[in-house]
Length: 181
Image 1 (cartoon, rainbow, N blue to C red):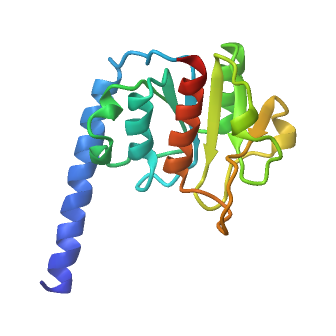
Image 2: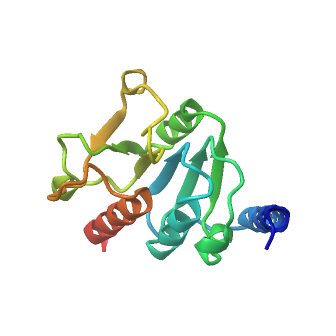
């Protein structure tokens, strides 16, 4: 396959992914909240990497909603239909999401590897919102400006500094559900 054919094929794949996204986003308008009270907040994640996978886990664990901050179109195919089933809320900036969740009575937790508070020992409020930042740069906001955001870490024992964000999100959702089921 020539270079030109490869580029054309990638462009066609991107167009098809965008069509799937638009179709599923329209269907998302009819999605019903999950059975649990927790919300997942995805703060400026790379659209093409983990977003769809997190929607899949959010559906599996009964998340109420997924809030997307500064995230553009993504291919919903890895979500295996979950994007059309889990309500999505879209925000341009974290401040808007933050205010909305506080007004609804949520306790906000940012997942950060260097945090001293362990997920394993935390007692999670029923209305918990878990914030996951960009895969490389973390959360987009200055924590001092958003003082209601608490931090949690997933205790790790190996050499690595952090987990893949979709894996971390699944662990957090599991722990929340474990405490409430």
